[in-house]
Image (cartoon, rainbow over all chains, first blue to last red):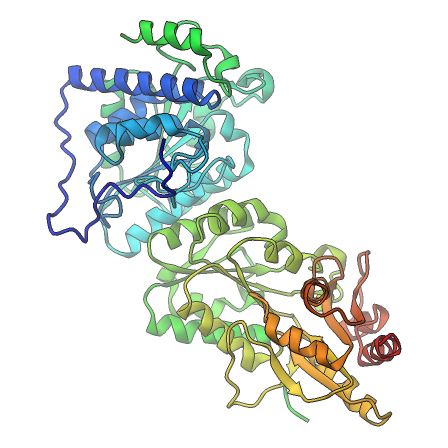
Length: 294
Length: 311
């Protein structure tokens, strides 16, 4: 267990040895293996914490893995590298998928993941950008991340930096009016360095989106707000990669990738089960989950 | 008598001057740039001005993203909309990560006037002062406004500056030097201390002048920085044996509450709070409203006498 308030392990740009840019050469098999490791971390860390949000973390594994292992320019040993691509986790409750991915990339030691949600851990229940290396935004209050990401994108444009900004939103999060304020503004400002990804797992705490608050016609809404809108199977690496590449090509328009996913993906009894939105697996369930993820 | 000068116009022009010198300054507004006076900046430096439309929540989180990327964003609208309309955005996007966003809210208090209670910001100071790490300033005149805006640029961290709508009489001379977190003794006195902010500073000085004729020697402090509060100046004020506060804000969570907190924990003395009480105001001319709701020199005088009687 860590007693540190901040994770000091990764070195910064002040170090004498220059931090390396993360290699994006992962093969399809390596991507798959990374995703499996990340899933194992997610169930283990939430299971050990006894609380957390495994469902919406598991649904986003391929999205986040593709970004960190195939798409984004980043330096795990220099989390504040000015030219890095930015990943903004707007659905802050999916912190476990981000922590696990950051650990697999080398931002923080894998051994620290089991401190999730413990007092004095730098892995808070929802993301805290002051504590965790590689976390760009403190999130957890839904609806703010796309606006924040737009601010980061506008700063990049002003600075003539060519970094790209990726914001991951939940579909339930899109109930929030601020998401649509940001959607309108991003198109208005022609933020073509901004990509929103919606983890469209179809469920939120109280049940299916369609019963809680119908979002449909969802892609048409984004199109109407002026976004290049791409729909993909959010568990398919190749479709995700293609969509991110397509997003890079368009000028004068932001891109949204609506990633159709399964909540709790990868663990049979967690899949499409809203009970695992905000509850961790118990010890028996954790064992079963890890067996399925072998 | 000193001239009346617009705090808002001073803000707008100061922001433009500072923006000319400092490339990192960017400005955001929510469809009120001609009222908040950020239009001066918008006209000269359009590439660094972001018109966000009538969407304050979005504006605040965009400002946070800009700040997280090294910019110094100034976000402006009416005080009733920020922090009121976007409190959670200020809390999570700005205060929690302690980002370098400067919120300058105009049309604070009831002197917005005829627009009525929907536009009269009477809770903003309580809301914003509750947020850890925020610096909160209520300038008393245009000279102080310009320097407060400069201080917001030179000091890292989240700032909230509240300005009033009407022009207001200058309190200070050009050689005044605003010091962040420090109260200003505008008048020495030994019988009672009046601590005031914003438009009430002028009323407090007038009250002190009138009370002098009745043999009451009033100390007057301007408390431009509400957070961090100048506790030392408040504790020192207890030596006068009585304290009166005056503000254009609800009693709950405003200047009076903040001063009382320091007083009772250090050196209790009788206090009176001249402020808006637990209700909303109405439409009317600014002067009529100040009169109706007791934010006047005369009412400060009454409060002073009442506090002294309880010594």
